[in-house]
Image 1 (cartoon, rainbow, N blue to C red):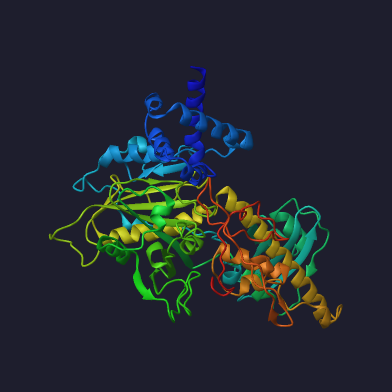
Image 2: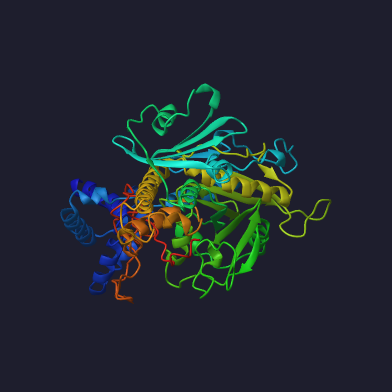
Length: 577
């Protein structure tokens, strides 16, 4: 009786270990079963798929003893690591989901939480395509701005005579002050740039008997300023560098992932391995944008190869309210035979912040099924009915669509609001909603804790480089330092090479800071000749689905382990422009 109890314990342990982090028990049994006439592997698998109470009649005493000894050895070898590496077997979830059928919503939350879903599950009810479409108002589809004050310097200072000043505060770090006298309006306009943010103020000249000093103006905007003097910026190209810094967060280019989920697909591997596009999915892509040939493409390419065809032959692209959007469609990215992880697809989609999931069937999407530190939000779309004839039918993508949204819990809510019920019967209205929602989703995701910390470090790095560049160049203009001691103006090159969004500017900032391509995983050069480099390998993704080209640790700024198991963009430095 005691031995049977121990067997049950080990069988339970074996289930979680076999399909946990290592997954090596079945292989070990297969290698040794050639010397045994009894098909032990089949007996074990039958036991795993059956209740524990039904397992005893299937095992003989000899088999029982051998299995017991096997697991005793495994337990001794693994010790406490056996429990640490254990993960849940997904098949029971798969079977439970498929048995429920069509009563599930588009999205299901992960077991451990950490995501919000809109519409909330407790309010979910079966929606009818004939229900009222309350809340469908395209005029309310406003696109969010990441920084409404980022263009103030370009708008109010560049065309007027103004002065800029720099200083290094003991507690606040580098400071950059710009002052403009608007004589017609009789007011002073001031911008103070600090590590955390930029502060903007407008003061009436009548308030001051004399024009305040730079220190006084800075303290009027921020009373934490403790410096006693500012240095005048006399570099002739300073306005260009200052404009580039202010607008480094302004981007009119966006890239989003597109995932294709078919009936019964619940895992990342299943979704990324889809290699065929159904007619229904192609119609949905036509709603998002136009299919373009990448070879020779001159628009925003979102990191895709437009010269050598290494990222596929075509992609989906669109222009929307003066913004260019490139979609990383999983089925159009390169497919690698035998690679269940599809790393060539994950390296692009895993680097996106927002993705669209198109469901063909009734299998729900699990919020955390795609393992990525960058992906923070998913918009899930499902066609619930195909329109057949009738007024309002459109040439492509006709049908009735249901939409749901999920994002990590630290991502603030964003508009436009979903209609009640979340049903769209017009493709043009669905397109307007999805593209606006995608852009606002990415801007809102930047406020999440992970990105906000990273953005603070990026801004600090850029401001420090800008202050040092302006100070050194100004000293050169005044004759205080020789030209030969100056760098090649790389301090701000990271934000003047092009506007590709925050992530791209962050990568450029690190590249400029290190003055080499080592921090981006590029080949080192000596005498103009690239040196050989060890190939990168994808780390094992046992507990989490993650493409893990581990980037080198940058010397500055620290990334709080954001990229410790992150997708690494191996494109050239110009690919993200």
